[in-house]
Image 1 (spheres, each protein chain N blue to C red):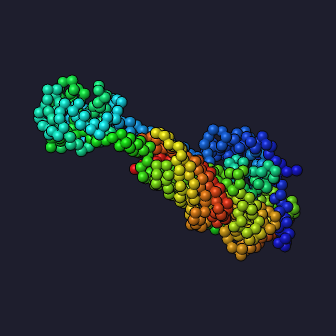
Image 2 (cartoon, chains in turn orange, purple):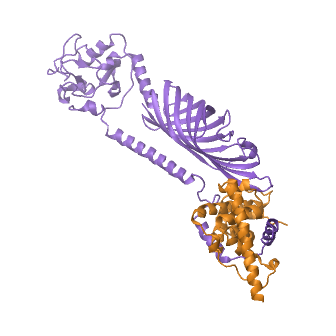
Image 3 (cartoon, each protein chain N blue to C red):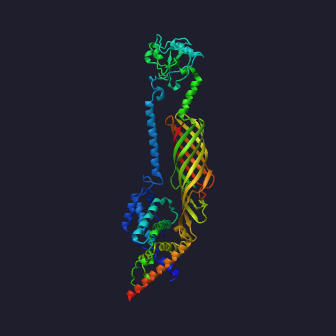
Length: 185
Length: 414
Protein backbone atom coordinates (compact mmCIF):
# COMPACT_ATOMS: atom_id res chain seq x y z
CA UNK A 1 0.00 0.00 0.00
CA UNK A 2 1.45 3.35 -1.01
CA UNK A 3 2.53 5.72 1.71
CA UNK A 4 0.78 9.05 2.00
CA UNK A 5 1.56 11.94 4.34
CA UNK A 6 -1.19 12.76 6.83
CA UNK A 7 -3.13 16.01 6.64
CA UNK A 8 -1.44 17.17 9.84
CA UNK A 9 1.96 16.70 8.29
CA UNK A 10 0.84 18.45 5.13
CA UNK A 11 -0.52 21.46 7.03
CA UNK A 12 2.56 21.69 9.20
CA UNK A 13 4.83 21.46 6.18
CA UNK A 14 2.87 24.20 4.47
CA UNK A 15 3.44 26.47 7.46
CA UNK A 16 7.11 25.68 7.57
CA UNK A 17 7.00 23.62 10.75
CA UNK A 18 10.42 22.03 10.96
CA UNK A 19 9.27 18.88 12.69
CA UNK A 20 6.64 18.19 10.09
CA UNK A 21 9.17 18.81 7.36
CA UNK A 22 11.58 16.39 8.98
CA UNK A 23 8.86 13.77 9.32
CA UNK A 24 8.02 14.07 5.62
CA UNK A 25 11.69 13.97 4.72
CA UNK A 26 12.30 10.78 6.68
CA UNK A 27 9.15 9.15 5.35
CA UNK A 28 10.06 9.57 1.68
CA UNK A 29 13.84 9.71 1.91
CA UNK A 30 14.40 6.15 0.71
CA UNK A 31 12.02 6.52 -2.20
CA UNK A 32 13.57 9.82 -3.24
CA UNK A 33 17.14 8.52 -3.02
CA UNK A 34 16.26 5.51 -5.14
CA UNK A 35 15.28 7.91 -7.92
CA UNK A 36 18.13 10.40 -7.51
CA UNK A 37 20.91 7.81 -7.28
CA UNK A 38 20.10 6.62 -10.78
CA UNK A 39 20.39 10.08 -12.32
CA UNK A 40 23.57 11.21 -10.66
CA UNK A 41 27.16 10.01 -10.70
CA UNK A 42 27.85 9.98 -6.99
CA UNK A 43 25.97 9.74 -3.75
CA UNK A 44 26.80 13.33 -2.87
CA UNK A 45 25.23 14.59 -6.07
CA UNK A 46 22.20 12.40 -5.42
CA UNK A 47 21.74 14.00 -2.00
CA UNK A 48 21.99 17.45 -3.55
CA UNK A 49 19.31 16.62 -6.14
CA UNK A 50 17.16 14.98 -3.47
CA UNK A 51 17.35 18.01 -1.20
CA UNK A 52 16.56 20.35 -4.09
CA UNK A 53 13.55 18.18 -4.80
CA UNK A 54 12.41 18.26 -1.19
CA UNK A 55 12.80 22.04 -1.14
CA UNK A 56 10.38 22.24 -4.07
CA UNK A 57 8.02 19.93 -2.20
CA UNK A 58 8.09 22.09 0.92
CA UNK A 59 7.60 25.30 -1.03
CA UNK A 60 4.80 23.97 -3.20
CA UNK A 61 3.10 21.55 -0.84
CA UNK A 62 -0.14 23.53 -1.26
CA UNK A 63 -0.24 22.44 -4.88
CA UNK A 64 -0.31 18.77 -3.95
CA UNK A 65 -3.75 17.24 -4.31
CA UNK A 66 -4.25 14.90 -1.33
CA UNK A 67 -6.62 12.81 -3.44
CA UNK A 68 -3.76 11.74 -5.67
CA UNK A 69 -0.61 9.72 -5.15
CA UNK A 70 2.11 11.59 -3.26
CA UNK A 71 4.88 9.39 -4.61
CA UNK A 72 3.81 10.14 -8.20
CA UNK A 73 3.81 13.85 -7.50
CA UNK A 74 7.13 13.61 -5.65
CA UNK A 75 8.62 11.45 -8.40
CA UNK A 76 7.69 14.02 -11.02
CA UNK A 77 9.42 16.72 -9.01
CA UNK A 78 12.53 14.61 -8.62
CA UNK A 79 12.66 13.77 -12.31
CA UNK A 80 12.37 17.43 -13.21
CA UNK A 81 15.07 18.30 -10.70
CA UNK A 82 17.25 15.55 -12.17
CA UNK A 83 16.66 16.90 -15.65
CA UNK A 84 17.74 20.33 -14.43
CA UNK A 85 20.83 18.66 -13.03
CA UNK A 86 21.42 17.05 -16.42
CA UNK A 87 21.06 20.38 -18.24
CA UNK A 88 23.42 22.06 -15.83
CA UNK A 89 26.08 19.39 -16.22
CA UNK A 90 25.74 17.99 -19.70
CA UNK A 91 28.01 20.58 -21.28
CA UNK A 92 30.82 19.75 -18.83
CA UNK A 93 30.48 16.00 -18.90
CA UNK A 94 32.35 14.43 -21.78
CA UNK A 95 33.34 11.21 -20.12
CA UNK A 96 33.57 8.39 -22.57
CA UNK A 97 33.34 4.72 -21.99
CA UNK A 98 37.11 4.49 -21.54
CA UNK A 99 36.84 6.65 -18.41
CA UNK A 100 34.28 4.52 -16.66
CA UNK A 101 35.84 3.11 -13.49
CA UNK A 102 35.80 -0.62 -13.00
CA UNK A 103 32.61 -1.94 -11.49
CA UNK A 104 32.74 -3.71 -8.16
CA UNK A 105 33.89 -7.28 -8.55
CA UNK A 106 31.30 -9.91 -7.91
CA UNK A 107 32.13 -13.06 -6.10
CA UNK A 108 30.07 -15.12 -8.48
CA UNK A 109 28.51 -14.66 -11.83
CA UNK A 110 24.84 -14.74 -10.88
CA UNK A 111 23.51 -11.47 -12.23
CA UNK A 112 20.33 -12.05 -10.35
CA UNK A 113 22.23 -11.70 -7.13
CA UNK A 114 23.56 -8.32 -8.10
CA UNK A 115 22.51 -6.02 -5.29
CA UNK A 116 20.62 -2.80 -5.66
CA UNK A 117 23.68 -0.80 -4.69
CA UNK A 118 25.79 -2.55 -7.26
CA UNK A 119 23.17 -2.11 -9.94
CA UNK A 120 22.87 1.59 -9.22
CA UNK A 121 26.64 1.89 -9.23
CA UNK A 122 26.72 0.41 -12.73
CA UNK A 123 24.11 2.89 -13.93
CA UNK A 124 25.94 5.77 -12.25
CA UNK A 125 29.03 4.97 -14.19
CA UNK A 126 27.37 5.70 -17.50
CA UNK A 127 28.03 9.10 -19.11
CA UNK A 128 25.49 11.68 -18.04
CA UNK A 129 23.54 11.86 -21.30
CA UNK A 130 23.29 8.05 -21.66
CA UNK A 131 22.37 7.64 -18.01
CA UNK A 132 19.58 10.21 -18.15
CA UNK A 133 17.99 8.83 -21.32
CA UNK A 134 18.27 5.27 -20.02
CA UNK A 135 16.52 6.18 -16.77
CA UNK A 136 13.76 8.13 -18.47
CA UNK A 137 13.06 5.49 -21.08
CA UNK A 138 13.65 2.20 -19.29
CA UNK A 139 12.80 3.01 -15.68
CA UNK A 140 10.32 5.90 -16.00
CA UNK A 141 8.68 4.74 -19.23
CA UNK A 142 8.75 7.93 -21.31
CA UNK A 143 8.81 7.79 -25.08
CA UNK A 144 11.65 9.16 -27.14
CA UNK A 145 9.47 12.06 -28.27
CA UNK A 146 8.75 13.01 -24.68
CA UNK A 147 12.38 12.62 -23.67
CA UNK A 148 13.44 14.80 -26.59
CA UNK A 149 11.04 17.52 -25.46
CA UNK A 150 12.20 17.36 -21.86
CA UNK A 151 15.90 17.37 -22.59
CA UNK A 152 15.75 19.65 -25.63
CA UNK A 153 17.38 17.09 -27.86
CA UNK A 154 16.24 15.41 -31.03
CA UNK A 155 14.41 12.10 -31.11
CA UNK A 156 17.34 10.64 -32.98
CA UNK A 157 19.76 11.71 -30.27
CA UNK A 158 17.51 10.18 -27.64
CA UNK A 159 17.45 6.85 -29.46
CA UNK A 160 21.15 6.97 -30.06
CA UNK A 161 21.91 7.67 -26.41
CA UNK A 162 19.70 4.82 -25.31
CA UNK A 163 21.39 2.44 -27.71
CA UNK A 164 24.80 3.42 -26.45
CA UNK A 165 23.69 3.19 -22.85
CA UNK A 166 22.54 -0.37 -23.40
CA UNK A 167 25.77 -1.24 -25.14
CA UNK A 168 27.78 0.18 -22.27
CA UNK A 169 25.75 -1.68 -19.69
CA UNK A 170 26.17 -4.93 -21.55
CA UNK A 171 29.90 -4.39 -21.70
CA UNK A 172 30.05 -3.62 -18.00
CA UNK A 173 27.96 -6.63 -17.08
CA UNK A 174 30.07 -8.83 -19.38
CA UNK A 175 33.30 -7.52 -17.87
CA UNK A 176 31.89 -8.08 -14.48
CA UNK A 177 30.82 -11.59 -15.32
CA UNK A 178 34.23 -12.50 -16.77
CA UNK A 179 36.13 -11.08 -13.82
CA UNK A 180 33.89 -12.84 -11.40
CA UNK A 181 34.30 -16.10 -13.24
CA UNK A 182 38.09 -15.68 -13.33
CA UNK A 183 38.36 -15.05 -9.62
CA UNK A 184 36.04 -17.88 -8.84
CA UNK A 185 38.30 -20.17 -10.73
CA UNK B 1 21.16 -10.40 -23.54
CA UNK B 2 18.56 -8.66 -25.71
CA UNK B 3 17.49 -5.06 -25.24
CA UNK B 4 14.26 -6.17 -23.67
CA UNK B 5 15.96 -8.52 -21.24
CA UNK B 6 18.46 -5.86 -20.29
CA UNK B 7 15.71 -3.33 -19.69
CA UNK B 8 13.71 -5.74 -17.56
CA UNK B 9 16.79 -6.71 -15.59
CA UNK B 10 17.61 -3.15 -14.58
CA UNK B 11 13.97 -2.18 -14.02
CA UNK B 12 13.54 -5.09 -11.66
CA UNK B 13 16.75 -4.39 -9.80
CA UNK B 14 16.04 -0.76 -8.99
CA UNK B 15 12.47 -1.18 -7.83
CA UNK B 16 11.59 -0.73 -4.14
CA UNK B 17 15.07 -0.64 -2.69
CA UNK B 18 15.62 -0.41 1.01
CA UNK B 19 17.81 2.63 1.48
CA UNK B 20 18.68 3.46 5.09
CA UNK B 21 18.15 7.01 6.32
CA UNK B 22 21.22 9.18 6.76
CA UNK B 23 20.94 11.85 9.46
CA UNK B 24 23.72 13.87 7.82
CA UNK B 25 21.53 14.32 4.73
CA UNK B 26 18.77 15.82 6.86
CA UNK B 27 21.29 18.18 8.48
CA UNK B 28 22.23 19.41 5.02
CA UNK B 29 18.56 19.89 4.23
CA UNK B 30 18.01 21.81 7.46
CA UNK B 31 20.77 24.24 6.53
CA UNK B 32 19.07 24.87 3.19
CA UNK B 33 15.74 25.45 4.95
CA UNK B 34 17.20 27.99 7.35
CA UNK B 35 17.72 30.36 4.45
CA UNK B 36 14.18 29.93 3.23
CA UNK B 37 10.98 31.33 4.71
CA UNK B 38 7.54 29.88 4.30
CA UNK B 39 4.01 31.29 4.26
CA UNK B 40 1.87 31.07 7.33
CA UNK B 41 4.61 31.50 9.86
CA UNK B 42 4.81 35.28 9.81
CA UNK B 43 7.66 35.42 7.35
CA UNK B 44 7.37 37.05 4.04
CA UNK B 45 7.82 34.99 0.92
CA UNK B 46 6.37 34.50 -2.44
CA UNK B 47 6.80 36.17 -5.75
CA UNK B 48 7.54 39.78 -5.14
CA UNK B 49 6.28 40.10 -1.57
CA UNK B 50 9.49 41.57 -0.27
CA UNK B 51 9.50 43.83 -3.27
CA UNK B 52 5.99 44.86 -2.41
CA UNK B 53 6.95 45.89 1.08
CA UNK B 54 9.78 47.96 -0.30
CA UNK B 55 7.47 49.66 -2.80
CA UNK B 56 4.87 50.37 -0.11
CA UNK B 57 7.50 51.72 2.26
CA UNK B 58 8.90 53.93 -0.49
CA UNK B 59 5.45 55.28 -1.25
CA UNK B 60 4.75 56.05 2.42
CA UNK B 61 8.14 57.71 2.71
CA UNK B 62 7.47 59.80 -0.38
CA UNK B 63 4.06 60.88 0.91
CA UNK B 64 5.61 61.76 4.25
CA UNK B 65 8.31 63.86 2.61
CA UNK B 66 5.72 65.70 0.54
CA UNK B 67 3.58 66.45 3.58
CA UNK B 68 6.53 67.66 5.62
CA UNK B 69 7.79 69.80 2.75
CA UNK B 70 4.37 71.28 2.17
CA UNK B 71 3.93 72.04 5.85
CA UNK B 72 7.35 73.67 6.00
CA UNK B 73 6.63 75.67 2.86
CA UNK B 74 3.44 77.04 4.32
CA UNK B 75 5.15 78.12 7.51
CA UNK B 76 7.82 79.96 5.60
CA UNK B 77 5.56 81.44 2.97
CA UNK B 78 4.99 85.23 2.94
CA UNK B 79 1.40 86.41 2.57
CA UNK B 80 1.96 87.40 -0.99
CA UNK B 81 4.54 84.90 -1.90
CA UNK B 82 8.12 85.57 -2.86
CA UNK B 83 7.36 87.22 -6.16
CA UNK B 84 5.20 89.79 -4.56
CA UNK B 85 7.26 90.71 -1.54
CA UNK B 86 10.44 91.65 -3.16
CA UNK B 87 11.63 95.03 -2.07
CA UNK B 88 8.49 95.81 -0.07
CA UNK B 89 7.37 95.91 3.46
CA UNK B 90 4.92 93.16 3.97
CA UNK B 91 2.54 93.35 6.85
CA UNK B 92 1.22 90.13 8.30
CA UNK B 93 -2.45 89.47 7.82
CA UNK B 94 -5.04 89.55 10.46
CA UNK B 95 -7.78 87.03 10.67
CA UNK B 96 -10.50 87.59 8.08
CA UNK B 97 -13.89 88.62 9.38
CA UNK B 98 -17.40 88.55 7.99
CA UNK B 99 -17.89 89.97 4.59
CA UNK B 100 -20.95 91.86 3.58
CA UNK B 101 -21.86 92.91 0.09
CA UNK B 102 -21.77 96.42 -1.09
CA UNK B 103 -24.96 98.31 -0.63
CA UNK B 104 -25.19 99.47 -4.19
CA UNK B 105 -23.27 99.98 -7.35
CA UNK B 106 -21.62 103.00 -5.89
CA UNK B 107 -20.41 101.02 -2.99
CA UNK B 108 -16.92 101.48 -4.19
CA UNK B 109 -17.09 105.19 -3.84
CA UNK B 110 -18.95 104.90 -0.58
CA UNK B 111 -16.11 102.83 0.74
CA UNK B 112 -13.62 105.28 -0.46
CA UNK B 113 -15.43 108.11 1.11
CA UNK B 114 -16.07 106.26 4.35
CA UNK B 115 -12.54 105.07 4.59
CA UNK B 116 -10.67 108.11 3.51
CA UNK B 117 -13.24 110.75 3.79
CA UNK B 118 -12.13 111.87 0.41
CA UNK B 119 -14.09 112.82 -2.61
CA UNK B 120 -14.19 110.71 -5.72
CA UNK B 121 -12.35 111.65 -8.82
CA UNK B 122 -9.50 113.01 -6.86
CA UNK B 123 -5.96 112.03 -7.57
CA UNK B 124 -3.78 110.69 -4.90
CA UNK B 125 -0.66 112.25 -3.70
CA UNK B 126 1.35 109.45 -2.17
CA UNK B 127 3.35 111.86 -0.16
CA UNK B 128 0.47 113.75 1.34
CA UNK B 129 -1.47 112.49 4.30
CA UNK B 130 -4.69 113.63 5.85
CA UNK B 131 -5.28 114.32 9.45
CA UNK B 132 -6.21 110.76 10.18
CA UNK B 133 -3.09 109.50 8.62
CA UNK B 134 -4.63 108.21 5.42
CA UNK B 135 -3.44 109.36 2.04
CA UNK B 136 -4.88 112.79 1.35
CA UNK B 137 -6.71 111.77 -1.73
CA UNK B 138 -8.11 108.53 -3.06
CA UNK B 139 -8.52 107.72 -6.67
CA UNK B 140 -11.47 105.89 -8.12
CA UNK B 141 -9.20 104.10 -10.49
CA UNK B 142 -8.53 100.59 -9.55
CA UNK B 143 -6.93 97.97 -11.57
CA UNK B 144 -7.15 94.97 -9.35
CA UNK B 145 -3.45 94.32 -9.15
CA UNK B 146 -3.46 92.48 -5.87
CA UNK B 147 -4.51 88.82 -5.86
CA UNK B 148 -7.74 88.36 -4.03
CA UNK B 149 -6.26 85.70 -1.83
CA UNK B 150 -3.94 88.26 -0.30
CA UNK B 151 -6.78 90.36 1.06
CA UNK B 152 -8.31 90.31 4.46
CA UNK B 153 -11.56 91.91 5.36
CA UNK B 154 -12.42 93.48 8.64
CA UNK B 155 -15.90 94.50 9.61
CA UNK B 156 -16.18 98.06 10.85
CA UNK B 157 -19.15 100.13 11.99
CA UNK B 158 -21.75 101.53 9.59
CA UNK B 159 -21.73 98.39 7.49
CA UNK B 160 -18.71 99.44 5.66
CA UNK B 161 -16.14 96.93 4.62
CA UNK B 162 -12.60 97.79 5.28
CA UNK B 163 -9.93 95.93 3.49
CA UNK B 164 -6.40 95.49 4.51
CA UNK B 165 -3.73 95.07 1.95
CA UNK B 166 -0.16 94.12 2.36
CA UNK B 167 2.15 96.89 1.41
CA UNK B 168 4.27 95.94 -1.55
CA UNK B 169 6.54 97.72 -3.83
CA UNK B 170 4.86 96.59 -7.01
CA UNK B 171 6.04 99.45 -9.11
CA UNK B 172 8.64 101.23 -7.18
CA UNK B 173 6.69 103.11 -4.54
CA UNK B 174 5.90 101.72 -1.17
CA UNK B 175 3.64 103.17 1.42
CA UNK B 176 5.04 102.89 4.87
CA UNK B 177 2.97 102.25 7.87
CA UNK B 178 4.06 105.32 9.61
CA UNK B 179 2.45 107.36 6.87
CA UNK B 180 -0.93 106.41 8.23
CA UNK B 181 -1.88 107.62 11.62
CA UNK B 182 -5.03 107.92 13.63
CA UNK B 183 -7.90 105.57 14.31
CA UNK B 184 -8.82 104.99 10.72
CA UNK B 185 -5.28 104.22 9.87
CA UNK B 186 -5.32 101.24 12.15
CA UNK B 187 -8.19 99.79 10.24
CA UNK B 188 -7.00 100.80 6.83
CA UNK B 189 -3.34 100.66 7.47
CA UNK B 190 -2.32 98.69 4.48
CA UNK B 191 -2.72 100.03 1.02
CA UNK B 192 -1.13 99.45 -2.27
CA UNK B 193 0.19 102.55 -3.93
CA UNK B 194 1.74 102.48 -7.35
CA UNK B 195 4.17 104.90 -8.70
CA UNK B 196 1.44 106.62 -10.65
CA UNK B 197 0.00 107.69 -7.37
CA UNK B 198 -3.22 105.80 -7.56
CA UNK B 199 -4.41 103.74 -4.69
CA UNK B 200 -5.46 100.30 -5.72
CA UNK B 201 -8.05 98.20 -3.97
CA UNK B 202 -8.91 95.45 -6.40
CA UNK B 203 -11.63 93.87 -4.33
CA UNK B 204 -13.75 96.91 -4.81
CA UNK B 205 -14.18 95.86 -8.41
CA UNK B 206 -15.54 92.52 -7.47
CA UNK B 207 -19.10 91.85 -6.71
CA UNK B 208 -20.41 88.93 -4.79
CA UNK B 209 -20.62 86.60 -7.79
CA UNK B 210 -17.07 87.29 -8.84
CA UNK B 211 -15.80 86.66 -5.35
CA UNK B 212 -17.75 83.46 -5.13
CA UNK B 213 -16.35 82.38 -8.48
CA UNK B 214 -12.87 83.14 -7.31
CA UNK B 215 -13.37 81.15 -4.14
CA UNK B 216 -14.73 78.24 -6.12
CA UNK B 217 -11.71 78.37 -8.38
CA UNK B 218 -9.42 78.24 -5.38
CA UNK B 219 -11.44 75.37 -4.02
CA UNK B 220 -11.24 73.53 -7.31
CA UNK B 221 -7.53 74.12 -7.43
CA UNK B 222 -7.19 72.79 -3.94
CA UNK B 223 -9.21 69.73 -4.88
CA UNK B 224 -7.08 69.04 -7.90
CA UNK B 225 -9.31 70.17 -10.66
CA UNK B 226 -6.57 71.26 -12.85
CA UNK B 227 -6.80 70.10 -16.40
CA UNK B 228 -4.17 67.42 -16.08
CA UNK B 229 -2.83 65.03 -13.54
CA UNK B 230 -0.11 62.45 -13.58
CA UNK B 231 -0.11 59.50 -11.22
CA UNK B 232 2.59 57.03 -10.33
CA UNK B 233 0.86 53.78 -9.49
CA UNK B 234 1.67 50.38 -8.08
CA UNK B 235 -0.73 47.53 -7.66
CA UNK B 236 -0.68 44.09 -6.08
CA UNK B 237 -2.57 41.80 -8.34
CA UNK B 238 -3.99 38.30 -8.30
CA UNK B 239 -4.75 36.58 -11.55
CA UNK B 240 -6.64 33.40 -12.13
CA UNK B 241 -8.39 31.34 -14.70
CA UNK B 242 -10.81 30.09 -12.09
CA UNK B 243 -11.60 31.76 -8.80
CA UNK B 244 -10.18 28.92 -6.72
CA UNK B 245 -6.94 28.61 -8.67
CA UNK B 246 -4.75 31.43 -7.46
CA UNK B 247 -1.04 30.69 -7.75
CA UNK B 248 0.47 33.79 -6.18
CA UNK B 249 0.73 37.54 -6.11
CA UNK B 250 1.52 39.59 -9.17
CA UNK B 251 2.64 43.20 -9.49
CA UNK B 252 1.95 46.18 -11.69
CA UNK B 253 3.84 49.45 -11.83
CA UNK B 254 3.31 52.40 -14.12
CA UNK B 255 2.09 55.88 -14.92
CA UNK B 256 -1.36 57.25 -15.57
CA UNK B 257 -2.20 60.54 -17.28
CA UNK B 258 -5.59 62.07 -16.59
CA UNK B 259 -7.33 64.85 -18.48
CA UNK B 260 -10.33 66.55 -16.93
CA UNK B 261 -13.14 67.59 -19.25
CA UNK B 262 -15.01 68.78 -16.20
CA UNK B 263 -14.16 68.80 -12.51
CA UNK B 264 -15.84 65.43 -12.10
CA UNK B 265 -15.24 63.75 -15.43
CA UNK B 266 -11.94 62.72 -16.89
CA UNK B 267 -10.22 60.55 -19.44
CA UNK B 268 -7.38 58.32 -18.25
CA UNK B 269 -4.60 56.77 -20.25
CA UNK B 270 -1.70 54.89 -18.83
CA UNK B 271 1.02 52.34 -19.19
CA UNK B 272 1.68 49.64 -16.63
CA UNK B 273 4.42 47.03 -16.52
CA UNK B 274 2.68 43.99 -15.12
CA UNK B 275 3.72 40.58 -13.84
CA UNK B 276 0.97 37.99 -13.48
CA UNK B 277 1.12 34.45 -12.15
CA UNK B 278 -1.63 31.84 -12.35
CA UNK B 279 -2.39 28.17 -12.63
CA UNK B 280 -5.00 26.10 -14.32
CA UNK B 281 -6.14 22.74 -15.59
CA UNK B 282 -5.47 21.39 -19.04
CA UNK B 283 -8.73 22.62 -20.50
CA UNK B 284 -7.76 26.17 -19.56
CA UNK B 285 -4.86 26.14 -22.01
CA UNK B 286 -6.46 25.33 -25.34
CA UNK B 287 -3.34 26.50 -27.18
CA UNK B 288 -1.62 23.21 -26.34
CA UNK B 289 -2.43 20.15 -28.30
CA UNK B 290 -3.22 17.09 -26.23
CA UNK B 291 -2.41 15.40 -22.99
CA UNK B 292 -2.28 18.54 -20.89
CA UNK B 293 -3.39 17.93 -17.34
CA UNK B 294 -2.30 21.14 -15.63
CA UNK B 295 -0.23 24.24 -15.93
CA UNK B 296 1.52 26.99 -14.01
CA UNK B 297 1.97 30.26 -15.83
CA UNK B 298 3.99 33.42 -15.37
CA UNK B 299 3.77 36.31 -17.76
CA UNK B 300 5.19 39.78 -18.08
CA UNK B 301 3.37 42.33 -20.15
CA UNK B 302 2.68 45.98 -20.86
CA UNK B 303 -0.84 47.00 -19.97
CA UNK B 304 -2.21 50.14 -21.65
CA UNK B 305 -5.47 51.10 -19.93
CA UNK B 306 -7.83 53.70 -21.35
CA UNK B 307 -10.66 54.60 -18.99
CA UNK B 308 -13.35 57.16 -18.31
CA UNK B 309 -13.49 58.26 -14.71
CA UNK B 310 -16.41 59.92 -12.99
CA UNK B 311 -16.22 61.61 -9.57
CA UNK B 312 -19.72 61.65 -8.08
CA UNK B 313 -18.57 62.56 -4.60
CA UNK B 314 -16.34 65.57 -4.06
CA UNK B 315 -15.35 67.34 -0.92
CA UNK B 316 -12.47 69.54 0.09
CA UNK B 317 -10.23 66.68 1.00
CA UNK B 318 -11.84 63.52 -0.33
CA UNK B 319 -13.17 62.26 -3.62
CA UNK B 320 -14.76 59.04 -4.71
CA UNK B 321 -14.88 57.91 -8.27
CA UNK B 322 -15.85 55.09 -10.58
CA UNK B 323 -13.92 54.11 -13.65
CA UNK B 324 -14.55 51.96 -16.69
CA UNK B 325 -12.67 51.30 -19.88
CA UNK B 326 -10.48 48.84 -21.73
CA UNK B 327 -6.89 47.70 -21.64
CA UNK B 328 -4.52 46.55 -24.34
CA UNK B 329 -2.02 43.85 -23.42
CA UNK B 330 1.35 43.55 -25.15
CA UNK B 331 2.89 40.25 -24.09
CA UNK B 332 6.60 40.57 -23.37
CA UNK B 333 7.43 37.17 -21.90
CA UNK B 334 5.41 34.08 -21.07
CA UNK B 335 6.55 31.04 -19.17
CA UNK B 336 4.40 27.96 -18.76
CA UNK B 337 5.15 24.82 -16.76
CA UNK B 338 2.88 22.24 -18.29
CA UNK B 339 1.92 18.91 -16.78
CA UNK B 340 1.53 16.46 -19.60
CA UNK B 341 0.29 12.91 -19.48
CA UNK B 342 2.32 10.91 -21.93
CA UNK B 343 0.92 8.35 -24.30
CA UNK B 344 2.27 5.68 -21.98
CA UNK B 345 0.19 7.13 -19.18
CA UNK B 346 3.09 8.61 -17.23
CA UNK B 347 3.00 12.30 -16.36
CA UNK B 348 5.87 14.64 -17.00
CA UNK B 349 6.47 18.36 -17.06
CA UNK B 350 7.33 20.52 -19.98
CA UNK B 351 8.31 24.16 -19.99
CA UNK B 352 7.21 26.54 -22.73
CA UNK B 353 8.70 30.01 -23.01
CA UNK B 354 7.52 32.69 -25.40
CA UNK B 355 9.01 36.14 -25.89
CA UNK B 356 7.36 39.15 -27.54
CA UNK B 357 4.23 37.20 -28.11
CA UNK B 358 0.73 38.26 -28.96
CA UNK B 359 -0.82 41.70 -28.75
CA UNK B 360 -4.37 42.16 -27.56
CA UNK B 361 -5.72 45.60 -28.36
CA UNK B 362 -8.59 46.73 -26.13
CA UNK B 363 -9.25 43.13 -25.25
CA UNK B 364 -9.62 43.48 -21.51
CA UNK B 365 -12.45 45.29 -19.74
CA UNK B 366 -11.43 47.47 -16.77
CA UNK B 367 -13.82 48.17 -13.92
CA UNK B 368 -12.86 49.97 -10.74
CA UNK B 369 -13.95 52.07 -7.82
CA UNK B 370 -11.58 54.61 -6.33
CA UNK B 371 -10.94 56.93 -3.42
CA UNK B 372 -8.72 59.99 -3.56
CA UNK B 373 -7.38 61.94 -0.65
CA UNK B 374 -5.83 65.38 -1.06
CA UNK B 375 -2.38 65.74 0.44
CA UNK B 376 -1.39 69.21 -0.74
CA UNK B 377 -2.63 71.69 -3.31
CA UNK B 378 -1.00 69.70 -6.06
CA UNK B 379 -0.72 66.21 -4.70
CA UNK B 380 -3.20 63.53 -3.85
CA UNK B 381 -3.11 59.86 -3.05
CA UNK B 382 -5.57 57.39 -4.45
CA UNK B 383 -6.58 53.81 -3.84
CA UNK B 384 -8.47 52.01 -6.55
CA UNK B 385 -9.58 48.37 -6.32
CA UNK B 386 -10.05 47.05 -9.84
CA UNK B 387 -11.17 44.11 -11.89
CA UNK B 388 -9.88 43.14 -15.34
CA UNK B 389 -11.96 40.75 -17.42
CA UNK B 390 -10.74 39.43 -20.77
CA UNK B 391 -12.98 39.53 -23.78
CA UNK B 392 -10.95 36.83 -25.49
CA UNK B 393 -8.02 34.49 -25.05
CA UNK B 394 -4.78 36.01 -23.78
CA UNK B 395 -1.24 34.97 -24.59
CA UNK B 396 0.25 31.93 -26.24
CA UNK B 397 -2.26 29.60 -24.68
CA UNK B 398 -5.27 31.82 -25.36
CA UNK B 399 -6.25 31.70 -21.74
CA UNK B 400 -9.12 33.60 -20.14
CA UNK B 401 -6.98 35.41 -17.61
CA UNK B 402 -8.89 37.47 -15.07
CA UNK B 403 -7.16 39.85 -12.70
CA UNK B 404 -8.11 41.71 -9.55
CA UNK B 405 -6.05 44.10 -7.51
CA UNK B 406 -5.80 47.43 -5.76
CA UNK B 407 -4.01 50.28 -7.43
CA UNK B 408 -2.23 52.72 -5.12
CA UNK B 409 -1.27 55.97 -6.76
CA UNK B 410 0.46 59.23 -5.99
CA UNK B 411 -1.06 61.93 -8.14
CA UNK B 412 0.27 65.30 -9.22
CA UNK B 413 -2.11 67.90 -10.61
CA UNK B 414 -1.48 70.87 -12.84
